[in-house]
Length: 164
Image 1: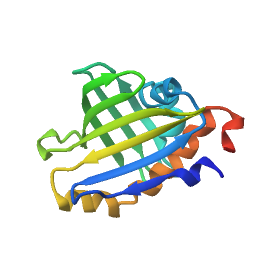
Image 2 (image 1 turned 120 degrees about the vertical axis):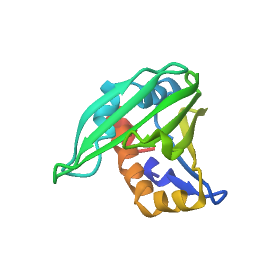
Image 3 (image 1 turned 90 degrees about the vertical axis):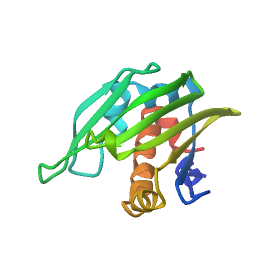
């Protein structure tokens, strides 16, 4: 079984979206892939034809991150937030806002990274301020985008990671 087949998307409540994926990597490497620009620029690059123009991370409680993509039409997409809890390599909690709009309420994302034998399970839990915003995120294709990005992430872990 390819690890991309271990990707799951759940909606346990009206305001929660949970994505999980099993990787052929250590928890430390998965943590680094989520927090270090040199990795993020390789896997979180957006759809075909997009480019990442900014990738800034200050991974500490109170530190901020900011990502900017440019689509094939030149439109920019901005995501940023602030870290509220960091416990390497198993936990990352941060707020997340789109287009620098902190007043929108944003979301809170909790990433748990847990070893399972010689693999690592990443669970991303996103809690949105309303049922409507959660539904918009589901309908945006975010889950499929993450599936593609997670496949790219696994590629940076090494060629042998492609097959479980």
